[in-house]
Length: 594
Image 1 (tube, rainbow, N blue to C red):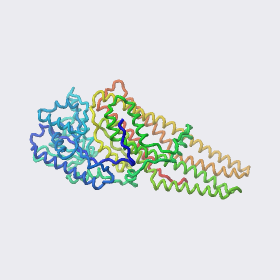
Image 2 (spheres, rainbow, N blue to C red):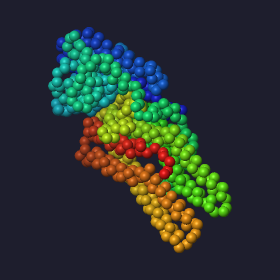
Image 3 (cartoon, one colour):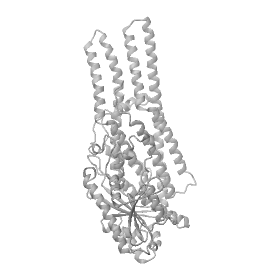
Image 4 (cartoon, one colour):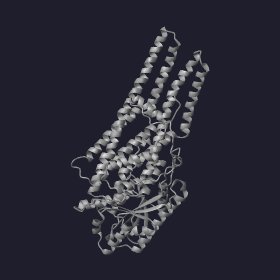
């Protein structure tokens, strides 16, 4: 395992812009003036570079200072427009990454002359990453499917698409017309360079519904800036806060874990007040995941670790830290509120009157202090945002080996408050994905078999096991809080009835203190949403087991297309669960118990 470079603060992504390519082959460029076409392509690439440099200059502090922006072209290197754009991109200082529909030697059969084949081989040699898919030519349908798949791969890795195209509708599966249409449906702007002279340039913008509008290059510039610039309508903006975080050494967040252990009837094991080293914890977790699949190519494991592990380390470690701090805060506040009622009644006893008053005062001040500090330092918001970021990055561990990224967030219309698509989290996550680019690998039968094992036995099964542990634990916590809280109110009733016959001051104390602690337990139960967490875990287990059953069928034949669909479905299920959790908890800030 390649050890990640340790940093004192969370790493920033390096600004990157990805330009996908689709276009006609040589026979579709019969009416082209190749010199003029190259000039047009160069003009578009220079424009995109100018936008990237402007954003980098304006937002220097939020991007890595590791050099100029990464300018990348993603091309399948098909004979014709794909090769022309790739050559012009390299001449303009762009890096080249290639997604090929077949193994590279098999793909050479697509080239009709020695000049094109030589240019193809030269470009492959200059590429920083090559992902060879498992396309087949055994039937015409499978061959067309391979071209369609690689076209969609290009879209998955693109912020803008250059299309050298005659504007005609798609004539077959995977053709330029289809890829342009899918780009517009996916809200990827398309720079359409007409394949016929005089090679006019037009920018097309689309959306989730069919149809598009024609705009200028200026509109493309504004669109790219909106994607690359960190605009955060949600308050507070934690982007700068996140990048200034440090590895904490101590925490009192163990209170929540101890409380849960007690009410779940588990052995109390809080882990203590010392915070586990983020790097060691993340490296151990990812190494365990990779060890479950020893046949998977080590080179791919190393690429994914290098691209994503450092980012995951900080997001996950900080999410755990602030989760425990926030949850321990509301547990402590509710319990201290009950204890304050107890101390409030003790001054009626003759001994230590001032001491009890001071104890009550100290508890009230402490509750106010914890609530104020927690809200001022945004413990709750940090937990919510950092957890979403860490989960999205963790999904890349099983998506990136297939060149995929996390599917777009799907947020119900009635839950647009705190929409993560407009948050700094989504901006930073997309920046990480852009910088990373594609892994380099040859996806053949052996690769797919080992990936299938990894996805099923590790990623899906590990999540199922997690939720199956979670569900009964939180069901028990919810049930016991309800049972004990209700029991305290019953005891209050008994104390009140007894007080009718026995005039004892301790009965007065019990009649006041017992319901105070009962209310505290109900408050903790409501704030912690233990039952909802348990039910969500039940639902997640069922969804993931269905996916695992599908991939584990005896007649399942691994292919890039099928495994990619299951991997994306798995990520979508997990992302939906994270978003549902976020919607539930984002309104539960620390409040004074009352």
